Length: 387
Ligand code: TGC
Picture (cartoon, rainbow, N blue to C red):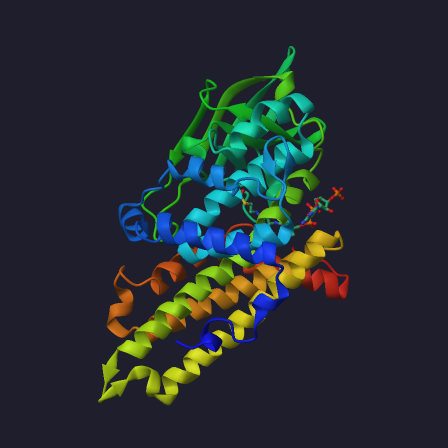
């Protein structure tokens, strides 16, 4: 492989020495702690929960949050971590997103001082796990139609309802549950083990096999007054957390794409047919070049959006641009990479088809392609076309 094969436009020059060092640290973690095991985890549909504490020690949980034991890194550094983790597997990057961008972010943005003190330091360390319950069986793209309710009862609240596709819920120590109240949608911190709360993994899955997604039921779940997140009122609260997770996906998807491309390139250089490496065939070179074009463009989009986020100028409609473009592109690259591997491409030993399958999950959660198209459509026409 040539230098241009790995960084065609020299994009590393756009990163500071500190950013490159952090990127390489996470890349090393993925090389040592994820790559050797990922096919086994994926095949057995296992999320290696023990990795949480290792990730916490490295500063991968709540990476871009500050205070309360959180690493306080920049948005670009958080993005670089997502890029490298998803080059390992989308399921492992999803863990970091759910923990840091959704659960911890909800507490950091909207929690009381007591809630932050109690939950954030052990969550940053990976000692406690959090989940984020927004989506429901009948309310996916339209969370405004949620039917989970919370009613005041004495000094506390009683929550009833159901959530679906909730990452980590069955191993979570605390669930952030969004529910409809008399005063609109509010967020509640529900500790694991609270009577009436159950979380059941959704199995078997064809994507995200090395992570956990669950059904949650809430039946007469009683929580104290101090469980409500005081700073969040209305859907703006959960959407602000989704912005964080969607941002990480912009980078992460390019990691999966890059890994699929690298697998295809390595294979094409080794694999001989008709007397020469298949990389010597024009059709293979065209596929590889198309991948390089799209990966480099996707990384530029991610970096530009990351710099805007660090500058405080990024708006949610621009996050939709990145999420839509980069996930759609990554799926196309992973599928194209699979074709270069021929029949071997369906073997778990090679990463492209695993990435392609995972990316179907990534394309769907945190806003489907269709949702982000309509967010962008509204942004450029001024006309909402959701219904
Ligand atoms: P609308 O209902 O009118 O807006 C409600 C309020 O929210 C505000 N808002 C945002 N605020 C910050 N960031 C954003 N990205 C926001 N989007 C909307 C909005 O301004 C309004 O505020 P206010 O103060 O006026 O009340 O919603 P809308 O018309 O703006 O949006 C419609 C639509 C379809 C775009 C939105 O509903 C949407 O994004 N739907 C997709 C939902 C989604 O992404 N669901 C995935 C959730 S992920 C999950 O639960 C499990 S996956 C993670 C895991 O693995 O656990």
